[in-house]
Image (cartoon, rainbow, N blue to C red; front, side):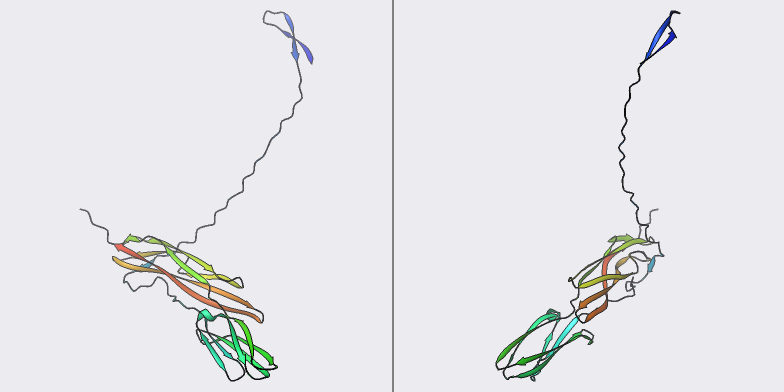
Length: 236
């Protein structure tokens, strides 16, 4: 406490009391994460469409998948299993004579190329003796290409479309979307009315991991939507 003389309102001297009280001020700072939005894809020239057979992508569906297993059981018996449902399979075979048998299983894709070439050596001491073997080929993942945009439009104005690609598969596969054509976002310009198909294609690289190495295939999938294009009315 301190005392200091001061002049009062009536001209007399008075004492002013000053009291000093220590105190502490606390501040709490709250930080918000900085959100940076991704830049939009660069805008390209619209695809001009005159006739209904005009494709908005020049890519076509092109897939590689398991087609066939051929099993040579080593005793003169050959077994063939067709179809993707047999990509992962087990084979049971009965050997009636003792001996050593060389067994081979070859997996082929839908283009006739070899995917896997497996072999086993089985010793049969006395027949009949059953033998069961398991084999795994490639399984095509579920890939969906969705084209989103207006279902009704008019001539003379570009319409904007976007493409979504969803993939799903097994744990021993890696899936990577390599490219989308004509782009993840594109525009279409119609010069005449009618019903038109808008298509987009996604190319996906699929890598399968097997004990002897990896198998990589590149597939292209196509999605589409239908748009009704109208001619704008002329008002006089």
